[in-house]
Image (cartoon, rainbow, N blue to C red; front, side, top):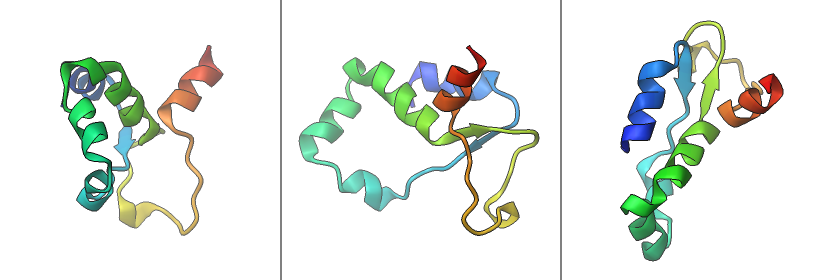
Length: 82
């Protein structure tokens, strides 16, 4: 985790994160993985993190979601507030 992602986690209250399983990351091409693990991918890692994050009233757990629930990811939420 990059410092930017850690800061985002620490600064955002009521954040729910949908974390991909390891097999999803392992399916990436080796060059993509190498890039994402490099210092050059900081901005891209924040964007990936935000695509998997939802800010709603209260933190949610998987057991509290109804089937086929639609959530708005963080980048969409930020864009709608601007």
